[in-house]
Image 1 (cartoon, rainbow over the protein chains, first blue to last red):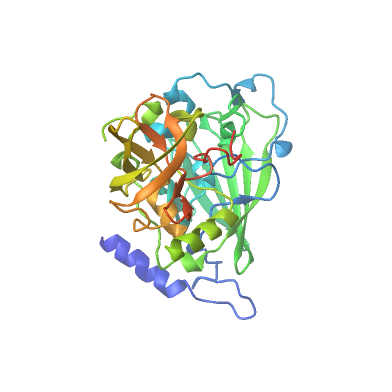
Image 2 (image 1 turned 90 degrees about the vertical axis):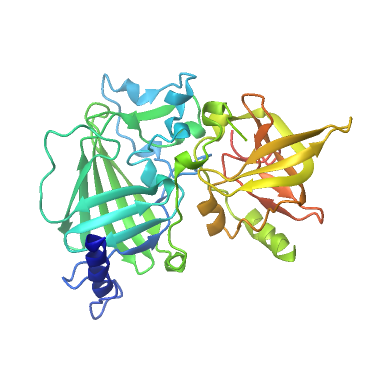
Length: 249
Length: 134
């Protein structure tokens, strides 16, 4: 709790610091300040998902490399495979980040913390120059580190499990998109204007694609959501019909 | 009730983009349901709200049905609070039956006796006949 108190005290002192001549909020160190409440990333191109999430635009994909075909994995009929989130398994990154829920950014000199309402996804992104951790198990959300390139925050995330890339299968149930365990993502975040973040996401999956590819998104600031804040999301609380088999009443 | 009516107008104009990712896994789009009954219980909990109604059949027998909606946080951010559906209300619910054939369904559209309605679920939890989803 003490750590949290310190975190909030630091944020309170930096959230509204401004650089003269620009409306972009900045921290006491002069870095763009992303602390605030936002919508989920919205794609600037591609089809709308028949689901509750933003999806990637296939026109931006690099060609598959030989052996990369497992990217398009068909459903198996086993709900634990076809929709593991139905059993409260994590969405992972980037899929969870693209879910249509509110999210809140907390920024200090050394960390950006992204809390997403869906599954209460929490990403703790060090900004202190450290390198990726070594010898840890691959994970659903990977191992992120961030650094500044001018006014753009660049987040590189590695060490993923093989997992679903996005929710496209709700639009075409025959087509799952599974990234490999070689995935590396690069997010580039900057203020486009005082109400909007530019969010560019690069998918670098050398087991799957012949080259890295990127998709631009925008993230709308939602200061009007600050008062209510994020709501709790505990999937296990009352998950009554996992896999279509309802329990209790 | 007027508030609910206005809310339904707002919701009708919004793209439906909410809810837990489970519709396809849990509910059968080939089995639309529409039934009217009295609300017996509301569970305003994650990952989906559930509400239950007693439905009287043509033979007079009463069956309790459960309906799943969106996540509480998503609904609240859309202006729908747990006050919208309360025990004792008579409502009509449209949705799709659960895959296991039990007396459970997604509850996509709730219509009140005055004709006003709310869309209580999300995109993949679409209501029968609204053309959304696959």
